[in-house]
Image 1: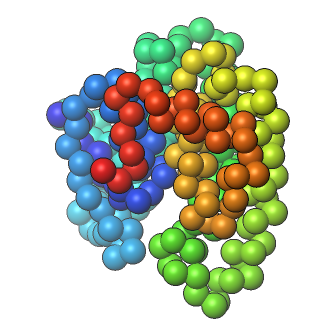
Image 2: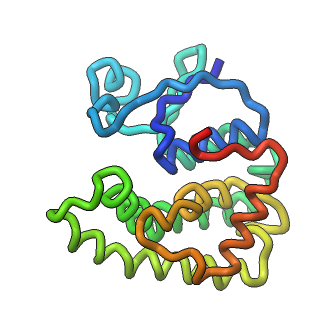
Length: 200
């Protein structure tokens, strides 16, 4: 049985839950409260020394960290992660974009507002994140104006990587009504059979 160590409110953790739903993979969810520091407890560090979530554990003791690596592993040889090298390179291109040009702005802004309740000490940082997050959304909008999904004509783990924090970007202060192509893309993903919400 696959074990997923994660926080249901986290976009990075949600990526794994969504892949499992779409591929009908059974799993056991081990709830970790990051606000209580549970990811860095001695028991968790023994399994995952980097002290972060999500990570997965298999029955044979195999542990894998980093959300995009996990969803590519789980999606391997399925429609979500095809085996041809050009497609996988394009998927990884979007996943690197997500980690370096999207998540550091949109997810962090959401963390400050949604998790922490917008503390005064982080207000300037929150406002500074809006510029980078808007730039990332604008790039996605332009691409999705002429493409149903990020890579090709069907859903891949590239879409899952970007969807996780994009569909809740409003919780970080980003107005999704300004991005009609992104909203249509979100609707396409949410209409897929087996789709699961971030929080049931």
